[in-house]
Image (cartoon, rainbow, N blue to C red; front, side, top):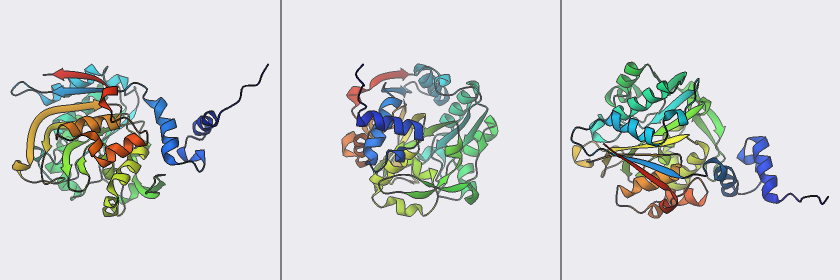
Amino acid sequence: MKKQLITRRDSLKKIIRFSGSILAAGNLPLSLTTKLVNAADTPDKWIVEGHGRQPGYSVKELTRKVFEKAGGMSRFISKGDVVVIKPNISWAREPGLAATTNPEVLQAVIELCQEAGAAKVRIADNTIHDVQRCFYITGAGQVAQKTGADLIHPRSSMMKKMNLHGNRLDVWPVFTPLVEADKVINLPVAKVHGLSGLTLGMKNWIGGVGGRRSALHQDIHQTIVDLAQFFKPHITLIDATRIMISNGPSGGSPSDVKVVNRLILSQDPVAADAQGALLFGKKPEDIGFIKLADKWGLGTMDLAKVKQHSVVL
């Protein structure tokens, strides 16, 4: 019987599978190894977009309907899971200013995780403004009290140096709850940003690390992609119930805000950001980190390849 030759690609797959590490593929470019890993992760590309059109619609109900359309939270969360939700609560801004994740969306996601049987749900973000003020003013603290979720204080003891294996970023302090969880849900808010153009799902991972974060804004598109390939959420839900259209990312004035009443859910973080870019009148390929993440195989920015589903409330 003729012996079947093992291709270099098959060998790489075996190396990656047995090592559990992208770097185990030796000195190959990270972009190649990332594509090998991610191509099998999410063969089906889909987006569920929720749109609240009725006056006074329930944000929490829209959040529930979006997950229902995607097959229910139990599709992503299993009984006994420790789930970490990564919102953007970095700024001490009230929810209506669109600098932070809508607390109603956050509460709905927590409750859905609990109903799916999660053993513990935790809220984690390394804030920019004073942490206690952020917890209080953004509404995250009140959500934690209502739901019983753990609101994690980003202490220095929770930052552990890890190799991010990025093209630009190597060893960096990582907020450990995000890597210790069984499942991670990325829950950003959609905003403009002075350097990156937009801040959506992938940029939200800057709140997942510590250290000298101002340095992360140098070559920011590459930095965002480095972080995105390290933090791989099980699901991304972009809060676009109200978006920041000017003076991002912190804003501070109602004039910076546009109410669009949208939610974007996807297992593909690049597709989620590509869809989010459309809300700002931007082409996905015109946003540096989206184009780069697509090139590296972290997902697709070609929305023609993504199954589109919608929920209207």
